[in-house]
Image (cartoon, rainbow, N blue to C red):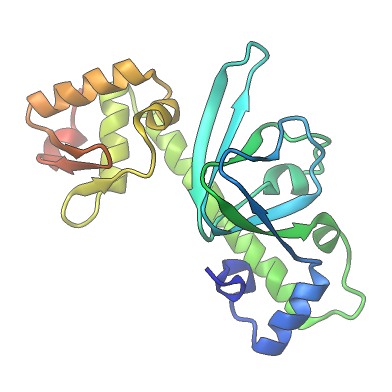
Length: 222
């Protein structure tokens, strides 16, 4: 992905785009697979946008157990919560799941006022608000899944929300990550998926896709 294709620069002409790169103090940083971009407890000072690759976001409790994990990829942003809420420390970590290239924007751009009242400054800030709204919607979707009942019902809700027009669900997460997303263990997830397949609700097409065979039945599963 090119820098100009990032949502944060949407609706900027060439002149505004070039000025915004200077105004935002943007820098490109590359990380190798398994490199940490920031650790839990680090001081927030940047907004990160992914140009290429995939990033793992997670948090760890005092016993060393991973509490949550999310994978994000090209075009998505992270680090915004602590940055804009003026948190002293990151509540989680960010790790390169693959080799990644990031655009990093300094906190000062969002915390300061543009003395020249530049049009590109306002547009970038507005685009950021749209990105935050999208992230809030995604969080609401996960909350809906987690509050939809037992594990079968949570899986059903997740599958129905992520299915395409052909009732095929492409999984961006592996089983361990999906289990964390659904607030269960990997063995429980695997057993329940196999049970749903045996009952004719779904077909486990591959490790990366699931075919819904009976959407209506999934909707009312108990």
